[in-house]
Length: 278
Image (cartoon, rainbow, N blue to C red; front, side, top):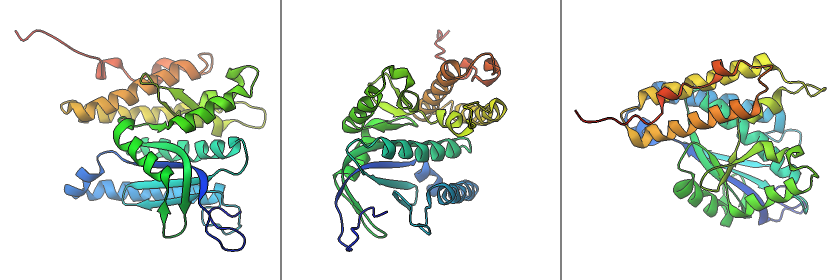
């Protein structure tokens, strides 16, 4: 499939979904020469690239790769060209890629934030340029704030349109794949990817596997809360993730099949604790 080059070899500047994201606290790791962190980061990254190659032909050996991904230091740019008038399959594949990457980084203690835009983009093996990249970068830098991947207004509009295709909006996959935050931004509900990935041909969830993965996610967030309890600017980012984790467990898991209490992060780790000075 031609992504940003025509069959005649002409470069194409195409309407695309563009995701830009980076790693929280990466510059501090560089300054501190945290070699243990870098080794873990590269190990997880290698695992994710192997997954993308297996599921999405990342190296394009078989000619069915549908997106471009560029990585430099801790910065990721993913371009997914709009193939038809609806963009539903493109956004669905983008969700699958991003949710898998985000979850597997976070459960290893590597938290990311970013944004998805929808505009013109060009990417090849050397170049990334376009309004889509500029908008995604600016949203990540100024608006994402927490370990979340938010959607631009245009990308959010597409999600709303896709949900509107269904008689009952709750039946749409998009209503599960994206959530709306208190500031109005839609963001990638990456934990729902665990359910999507575990469904068998009958639509049954692998409850044990999902529980195990959620416990790993819980441990990573709890560690972040504990380690950064004295650094409020960093701490609040883990608070956001803890609230998201608990929201997901309470709203997306069937209480008949999951031990919800064991999966929840104890609110005592992140709730506001105000007292007198005396």
